[in-house]
Image 1 (spheres, one colour):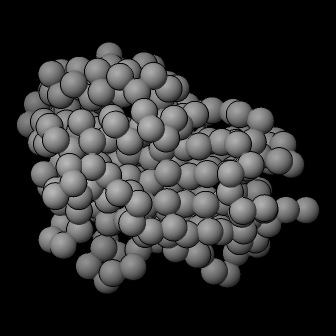
Image 2 (cartoon, rainbow, N blue to C red):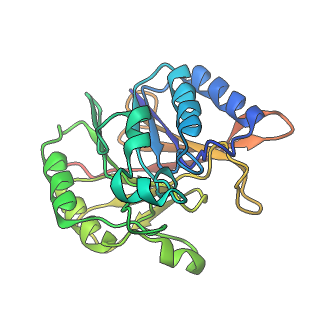
Length: 265
């Protein structure tokens, strides 16, 4: 069995201590095999914020896969943004901006969709699309194939259309044909699981809310996703659990369960 914990948009620098403590408790209870940080790890890409984020992720004691979000590039320090946009991120999370993680039942491929010359919008290049496709095609038959980006590839509200990843249509078409099962993202602080239609095979967008930040959407609590695949999920299904923070209980509680059935040859 494989358990993946998706933590998105924690925006360290705006974190709420009780929510952070509750998330650490959830991770220690559920014992994920890998932690995915899907961008906007910090609020303003400051060294102290990256140190806090790294200390948090290290405290969970599991492998960490991280991708930068637009907030992880200096905004107000123009010189740093233009000359060394990822220097502070690299100091905290390493030089690999597009890590890959393999388990017998799981393949996770991360993609850096940020661009220093863009304020918020994400973008994906043809080279990145082809790199991901090649990794997906090399996956084992029993592996769930997960792609991680920051900006969403699909949205549920008209107000979020401008936040979609630039180049998402061509990427989804190629990745579906290459065997992708899920595309995980964040950026808009809104959790949902959405089937993507008109592709070569079934593919789902899995979005996470903001994990620990005070920058929540109205009516949408802090939340994270737990993905289960293998022995403790229904046969042939991937179980995606949304866990919401309860201020009353000062804990993350299971809020929603979605089961998807990846296509297998």
